[in-house]
Length: 377
Ligand SMILES: Cc1ncc(COP(=O)(O)O)c(C=O)c1O
Image (cartoon, rainbow, N blue to C red; front, side, top):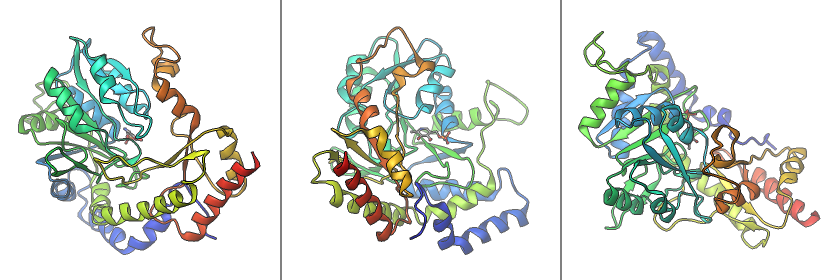
């Protein structure tokens, strides 16, 4: 059996080796390493794929979030609402900019920010909401947009884990995750559904003025060369990564289908086991399975990764500690039991290998090993 990995980038590369090698070689031949034509080409390809007016590439997903908040003119003291159960980047940039992170609980089925919890957390200082489309499935963005419009708030979608997912709007039309809020932010970290071979990120918006502001912020606060009207940052996607992403973007939908095939295999093996809850599909979004995350109950979850490891199966806990209980984000406003869903998920979730190259032999070994652990414990 082929070695099982959380993410098998090597086998994925083998299938597109010629395309990737040619793309990289062309960039080297051109020597246009920074802001070369491939960056613009990728930007246009992604705009077309997402159906969004502006894509602004940047250096990584964390920068995408930070730049968006800077471009929206958020100021110290402004409150920004974010989920407690997420990857740290979301809360980190809020704190880093001197804004006030206001954490809220998530939905037990979808793991995504709970719109009712958002509404309860709004104060006169609230300026923005950052829904994270966690593990590959959209948060209830229509409901969030309604709340935002009622309270005149910005919505910054964190789509790092769900690029390519479709959300079904109230009127039945479908929109790509990250193109519904005022601004969408993504990461091209190698293990992401659309990952490059290094760091990368992008910001999406349909707002012309905001797009211009974002382009200024990512480029040292500069519109005219060497004239700096505001304090910006240096955040660029390099040409080599853009060329790689152009190739991989063409395969993104087929990659999502491969992930869904693996997820269905897992579902069928686990769905009747009372100690495992398979990922609940949200009826307003499809799932692109960045992660396949089970919720366990009545077993010692912490012993499962070790058991699987002995059988050559990696597994990860995304995420073991919710944001409000993290040392760096301790705040007198929060204490244990404040966000019961986030806390309970942190204690009970486990993510199994999920990528585009899982074969039946591997999936069989993974599922039978998980079930074996449950039987023995
Ligand atoms: C939800 C979420 N937001 C933001 C990021 C940050 O992306 P990057 O690692 O490219 O800075 C990640 C990446 O892991 C993520 O999962």
